[in-house]
Length: 189
Image 1 (cartoon, rainbow, N blue to C red):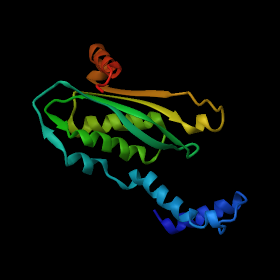
Image 2 (tube, one colour; image 1 turned 135 degrees about the vertical axis):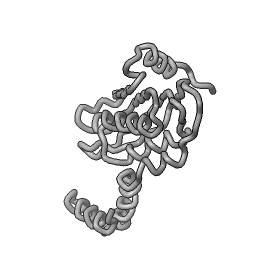
Image 3 (cartoon, rainbow, N blue to C red; image 1 turned 120 degrees about the vertical axis):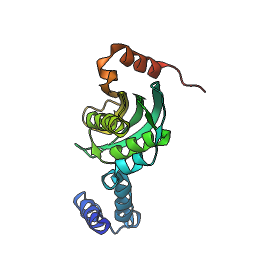
Image 4 (spheres, rainbow, N blue to C red; image 1 turned 60 degrees about the horizontal axis):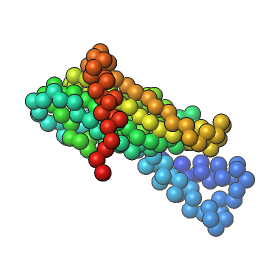
């Protein structure tokens, strides 16, 4: 990302909005915005496979593995406004597992791109399944979208839920039901 070019564009945007980019409170805003956007879109410059391959471990188990309440922050590709919430990931391994922190890193890599929640959910599930040849994967996301909250219909309490279920989570109703049941189980204090 060309940060100098982004800074120029922010200065231009401030002028279009009727602001003076040289006034006291805005003088450093183009630089701050450029740094912010570099972070918020860092997923374009990250390779999920590089992150995953560092932490694939042999494990002779086929139990369900579940990680809940992964914080997720992304930007809606339609309005470039934030959406945020929680991501829950479950999978059944064949003979390999992922290091637990890598699940959160996969979420972050795809979330730090312009997204729609539906695609984000599917990308996470597909990447996990591919990385370890999982028997099945389930991903559920619950997010609030600023494009719904602070503009348009202005519905502050709306929460969008998406899911992607692959393999045994898709084909076996009992596996899918176990996954959904575990998501509803209260977390320990």
